[in-house]
Length: 232
Image (cartoon, rainbow, N blue to C red; front, side):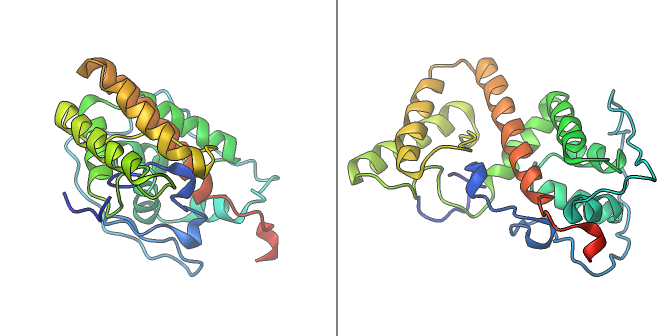
């Protein structure tokens, strides 16, 4: 797996992932930015099944209350291909991205996050595997390796990551939103060691929930711009 020296593949350190807004998406192999200029329609791709079957209600904007956040407005108005690619920067499951794209427009960020959370809970094993594989291929160092700490602590963390990947077959993911930089290394090391004791089924559930939290944080950053839409 290509990585720089040693958060993990795609840096599950959610708050430092820097998905600041639609105009500043992180670099992603399958994800393009949503520019401020009009978007051209992306070519559609065939799918073997309907990925949109869910209990998520289709969202509709009240015509009397246009969204006040530029980022959310642009996300709602983007063509489906561009919206899907932007969402893949938040979670690498195509089914997750397609569902959220199909249920636009969202009247507010809370509605978008609620739909994203529900879609995350509905990920099938194959969807989860796809998302975890996507995390593995991002050219970022191992989770926690950029955090301050002693050489011995970094060596221990690198060994813990290797043991985790050998046991479970994918990179370690954990949401570190709200964790102070000086606490990250110890937090990640403790979490990896604790979760190494899980059996594969238990760890799959834990990893899925961490991916859900990471995706929500990235998604909130993606549409978070507090300029009035009418001021464009």
